[in-house]
Image (tube, rainbow over all chains, first blue to last red; front, side, top):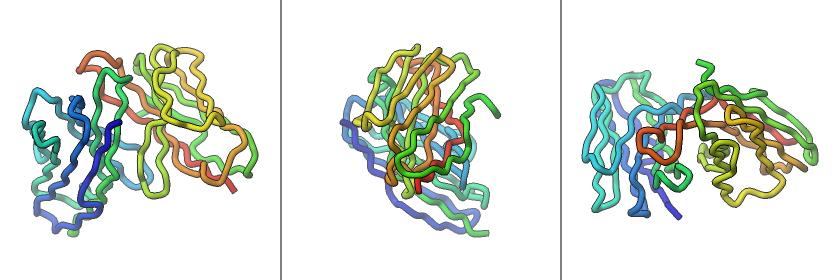
Length: 113
Length: 116
């Protein structure tokens, strides 16, 4: 089955700096890659997603890139703010396999004011 | 913010007991899921139901039995609770499973289960 690796497990940045989180996946049939943000004690919430027919997608300060050949995708957050502090999860899905999401292990991002 | 709701929010119980967690979505989605998040924050799919029918069962012990009375509800019943069942259980839903635009999954607030 699918295996998703996520790095780093913790990331500390200064407010205003950029943060990059990287994920690799094993199943070349995966075609949907969402990113979720989970604040302490809260539910995971989708922040951005990308599908395999696109190499890059941007939404304000958040961007995601996908390299299907290398089977890796990354989350980029620019101009980080303290409220960006949370755990971020990448995930991969084959889509038609019951839409099962396989999650990475999570990255705890801390933005220092 | 009640699109996907779960009850109870917290559940503390003794080992060996049987308990249920309920999930409801009012988004009109066809597919619902249960995830388990352990103490290390790792999120893992347990079950997926589409239109009340089971489509994924990810090697979950048969002490866990999901039930979907209709497509808006997916409940999780757990028999003979064990210490290792302590975790946060999240319900989620998505519009469908076959079309790319229907894949986005929306999570419920979670149920924190503690088995003593």
